[in-house]
Image: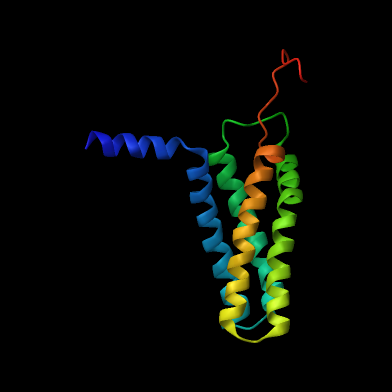
Length: 149
């Protein structure tokens, strides 16, 4: 029982695990919006619904990452400024998702192909986002005594 608790503590403190959990919640939000708007109600094309769903997921992801995954990496920026910086970073991920789905929807109307493109865009987008979260959005504050500053 003690080893299970130790493993749980280790995983709960791992930033990547926290980011994956937060990302998973945002993907659920994004995918729900995507499915409802493009597949079930057919209000938008899949590529347009990807962008709308992504924005909903972005707001969810930013809030949860700010509070849960990267709470120890707060800098002097206001939350609004950090959100703008966050949007600039994830815009590359949104573009990748949109591009994959756009290509798929213009080559076929097969839902499996569109969903595969959607999943591929999300996977590549996660790699893009997580890397830039560290480098740009929640970068480690530099100590004033740091000689490399």
